[in-house]
Amino acid sequence: MSDMSNLKEPGFRESVDLMFNRAVALMDLPPGLEEKIRVCNATYTVRFGVRLRGAIHTFTGYRSVHSEHMEPVKGGIRYASSVNQNEVEALAALMTYKCALVETPFGGSKGGLCIDPRDWDVHELEQITRRFAYELAKRDLIHPSQNVPAPDMGTGEREMAWIADQYKRMNTTDINSNACVTGKPPHAGGIAGRVEATGRGVQYALKEFFRHPEDIKMAGLSGSLEGKRIVVQGLGNVGYHAAKFLTEQDGSLITGIIERDGALVNEAGLDVEAVRRWIGAHGGVKGYADATFVENGITVLESDCDILIPAALEGVINLGNAARIQAPLIIEAANGPVTAGADEILRKKGTVIIPDMYANAGGVTVSYFEWVKNLSHIRFGRMQRRQEEARHELIVNELERLSRDKEFDWTLSPNFKEKYLRGADELELVRSGLDDTMRTAYQAMREVWHGRADVTDLRMAAYLVSIGRVASSYTAKGL
Image (tube, rainbow, N blue to C red; front, top):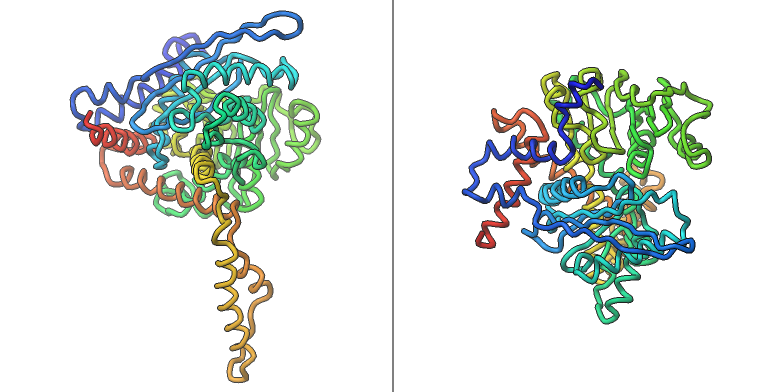
């Protein structure tokens, strides 16, 4: 990237603000309400010490609350050495808009701890996490009805289980304590399908996009997801699941995978499972056999493909490389992977971008289902599954009786009985709820995208829908 582009490149928080400004310029918000929605309500910075390896180590963490138009507020906790207040506040703002867009009844929040998890062993990480959770929980920054964290970059089910247990130790009489955090393991109050949720949401978003011929045409593409060449940047939880589902269920080809140490390219399609196993065993993609290795992996973002899925860090598509991006369709599986400057360049080129606040909302959607499950104290499907099967059995028995009648020359298809009789379990219900959420949210964006002459892209449409909903909430509260 040139020095010139470095000077002009907005940071992540500036990018979110610029995109917000673009949207509110087209809205007729009451005086002062625009500013109320824009600003972060509060950011708490905590510095705490933990005795490890014979010495006291001091850690810095953040919990930012962007908007309390609905409570609890919701947002992940990330562990990364690059975590800072600006990033956390930008992510909290995105969470507000994301929750409003997919109609989960939460305000936006985000948390972060300045730590490289790879520097510490499991026991040490547990001590650090529990102390961080303690510092937040005693200020109600972890609370089932006020602030509900979730996993993010560098955290997962294990950390959420530690946080939930720490909260329970501090609130022994709170019957809803399991709902203080989402993304827990299934055996510890979690929900089926949460780990895959964000990647699954990316798949459902693309499937919905490809249901609309007009939208496919605007991206300069045709047909379905089958055979589409996809480049994925970041094969973490989100990128891996998105790539896995798109290849296994939709017939897409993953022609490029970009990781920390380089990239793999194979026009015939990469084996996602095999690459994932290789990364797990070797810590990177270098040395993987069935592909061409590219040392400067980030250049693969610019390769010829149909769909580009940035699924790792923010700002990977910026002023330095935006003009060389060839993909006609980008879906932002990560938060903020396209800077505001790059967004402008790509829009002028005619690139269609499915924005982060919609594309990666699968995580918070299924987190909402987990929170509801924790508050209701019963798993989804427990009451109705067998009754559903019994009703289906009545129909199947009647069809079988008719098929034995000599007047009717037909039989049931193989496996029809088994498939039809099986009632939906929790995982199927979660996927159904996620699919419906992604479809409905896309249609709300699409209505604005195609219905207003002054809206030329999906990101603008997403901001208009979400800010409109947040504004309505504040107005209803008397603000």
